[in-house]
Length: 322
Image (cartoon, rainbow, N blue to C red; front, side, top):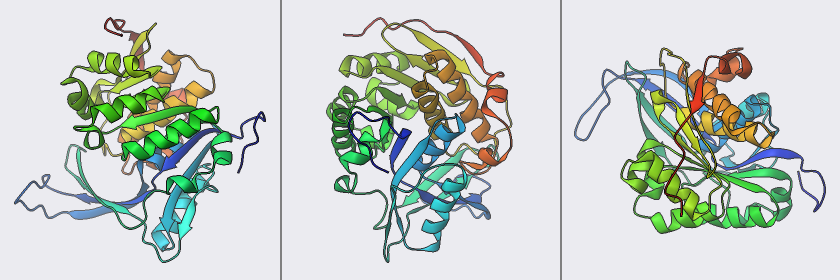
């Protein structure tokens, strides 16, 4: 899959990053330091932030592709096969001979809340030089994994130069103590997603202030997610808030990825910010009702049907944008 300058772009959303295998363990309590929790294996599912985002973009009706790296093992083959079955183009991905696909072990308590441990192997994401300019030119939006901010910035700069828009999802572990690099990434991004942990790192827990700082740095749209409280979306001109219906939480893994992917897919298809937020919150809510970050894709519930149950309203506009 390659792009020719000036030609129509073949892909709406290109996610560049990871695809993992997730092992879910039901535990009586989440184990902490110097603690032990003996549970039962609840299931093995496909995961990875980038893979989840691409799948959710497809769920929203966008043409999505994933550029990742997996090992030449059975988990790697299954990871790509499952994504392809959900309509994600995995042809840009690479398989590393003799490599081991990275995986996560996820503790789940009785409320559905999680504690995740990722086991990074020698294979997780493609090297920046493996992502060609032709591939970037094939996409309308490029979404690089932001675990490594410098890697993400390098791809964002190249994506923008190719004429693509850029979407990034900020995680607290990646942004802690690196505000200067976060602002640099925001300068080259159109959509920025930020969860509550990242808000604490970047703006001392103030969601509106976090959005103001990211937009002041250069981001066009900022979406702040709030778990059960839904999400808010901000631009310099408008702000919206959305909350999903009450749902029995089974597993929160990948809910933020699902929201980001569905929002991005909806937005690049030309839907309004409000309707894109509605689609994102609907997809995140669907996600937490199932075990595994992409199990909702097999549930048979269409995004439009569920989006009607999302409460949407105007939010106070941002005041402190520089």
